[in-house]
Image 1 (cartoon, rainbow, N blue to C red):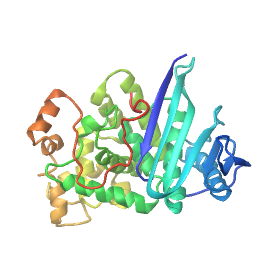
Image 2 (tube, one colour):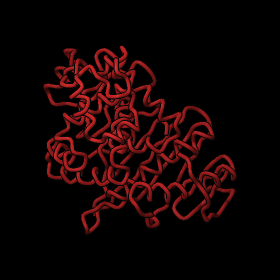
Image 3 (tube, rainbow, N blue to C red):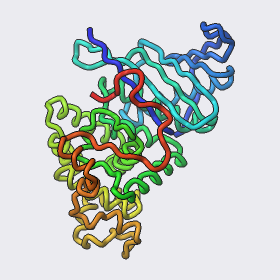
Image 4 (cartoon, one colour):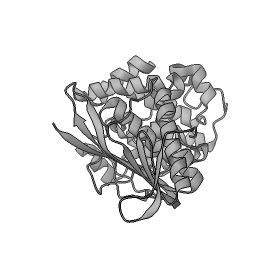
Length: 358
């Protein structure tokens, strides 16, 4: 029986929650008097009982409601409970690690959970905790790691609006930087590990996940990722993802998906327009000309014009690989690594266990 160790980390990270059965104790087994609350699927350690109880209740509620929201059904109880370490204060962040045990049906089963969440009280409950719980739901549902953009992007969808807005603001910074820090889709969709600087991946992954979810809903997105994972197993790379994208969303390939997404971001990431037009969005803006911004802004602003990157037919990778270092990385087939001018992830993504990607 083989075991694969996985670690997932998050920067920031919705809120729904109710009750769970629990047992409380003032001794955590490590010589410290603190809050400890045990429920069906979690054991929560916090500075006091009240906080531990609130996190425990929210964790069980999120596990139920988010599993139904994303997969259409509840998860069965885990055979191994997930410990959650809660730390109040500081910047909002979280990390979750687990191991996959290979089963006879070929699917992995997650065990050896470890979750750490920290930040201000409200952000822990409405952002960091649901983000991390969604990671555990995906690990249980898929039985294997997801592509980094899809996992982090989807998990960000359940965060508080303030945190999601931060990701959008970061995306705009990255796309407007010179050279652009945007990640070409043919690279992003097959990324098997976190890049050294991960914030562009978080911001762009969230935006792309939102772009697709607005067109088909969360459960269709989960089905899409599942089909894409099967293509990965056949080592089809970006060509496999292009085929699955055409099947689920009607874009002929990742290039057309990328072009449409760029236009949508330039138009302001409008949810209503996208839900109305769906995969016809890119075709409609193409018919209006590359300078058009759909029906939202007849005349593009300077910011929107910059996002168009020279028109709908511009090669995104050409906008990124402008420096000698970037060109060298691109030619070698390596993942591009970008220096981030603002904010840094508080965790060392390479420390500890093996990165989550295959």
